[in-house]
Length: 139
Image (cartoon, rainbow, N blue to C red; front, side, top):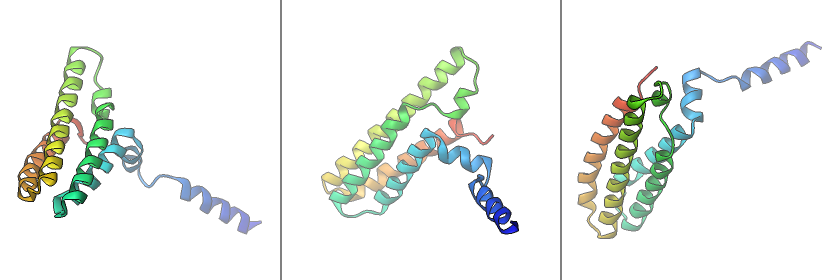
């Protein structure tokens, strides 16, 4: 009987999230898309093969396009009104700019201009930092 209780307790404990913050970021649709974007972004920064780099850029584009349809959690906490609408438009505008930059990365790879990818990555780093400061505030 004790073994059953121990096994049941172990099973239930294994189902508990490690932390609320970790669960929140991993299980939101936006968090999932940003994770996909980040994986592709990290990979194409180091890629030298044009075909592979272009494919990774397209993967990142897909993730950003899907993320564009989501709303950051920081915005969902704002009261409805002009401030929230403006912040949502700003989020979509920033994500659109990231998407355009990813298209430029793809074009650079397809043109064999790998050195141009590094320049675009620098602008993407700045966009990422600005976006996280505005919309991914730690709660």
